[in-house]
Length: 242
Picture 1 (tube, rainbow, N blue to C red):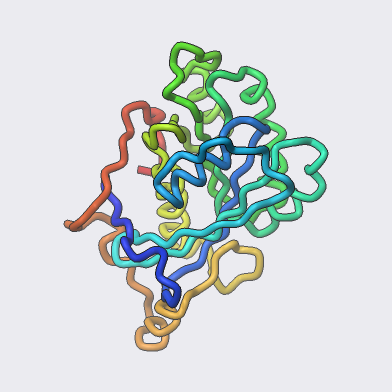
Picture 2: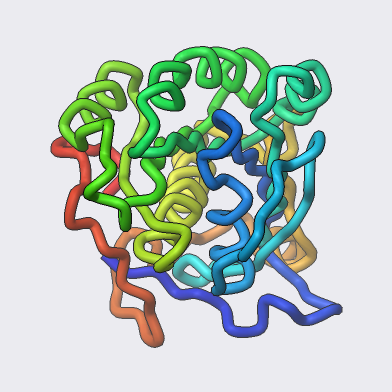
């Protein structure tokens, strides 16, 4: 499986087909901000401090023929910020749920985060569970098989990644975006509906005005150039997203 990633994501005057709202959630200290920084800046965030409230960033990428802008909300994991951060869950199209493979406690509290996200996010919320810090295998407290079973039981996608090395960091964001696009194509998600977590961009609106049907072309598979291969060495068996 392969996805195109736009090289011009930092351009100031950009056009895109869709804008998607994603939230990054999980316990404090799991490396959420570092994971997001690696995704948006392609580098590790040294001396990262705990997020206070919510921080915002974005990145534009390409899936098939579609240009997607991700609106990324990095939420604080501390309990004292919970009432503030939960308000940003509303209408999210995707949630990156992060735990630390070296912290049993961060894994044990996943259900609470998932419950809040599903209660407040869009009705079609896509959730990707990410076991961060896969580079610290010798300190592992949560086995891959255990996390995989939890993901299957809770109907979410799962993978492990390392915000330090960058291994598999792009995968959860790309998989979530692809799942949302396929839901739009299938008619299960309407970008014009309030609270969907998705809206049309200028490129898509121009295309809709010139065509009665929005074509997703190569999303279903076709040859693509300049692609980034996702490393899925430990992908959950039976996953529905690929």
